[in-house]
Image (spheres, rainbow, N blue to C red):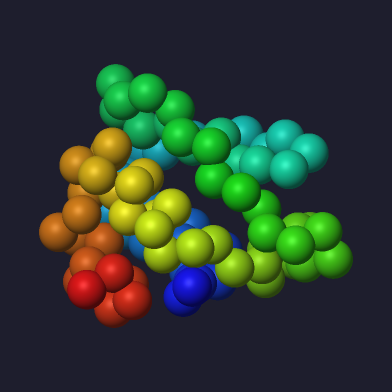
Length: 82
């Protein structure tokens, strides 16, 4: 299944969801944006979590973008979402 690096996902959130907040837990990032329900974004493999180099499945990213209603912007920033 195709993946996108976690760094690019956070870059997409910076551009498409200004004002979002992220809270780090042991295995997930809890992302909050506007009045939407928080989304749990997995950190990826254990060895890559601290460097934010782990991959996130494209389906998970699409689900987050639909919840936050930022899909149009996200498709421009991350070509994998097309």
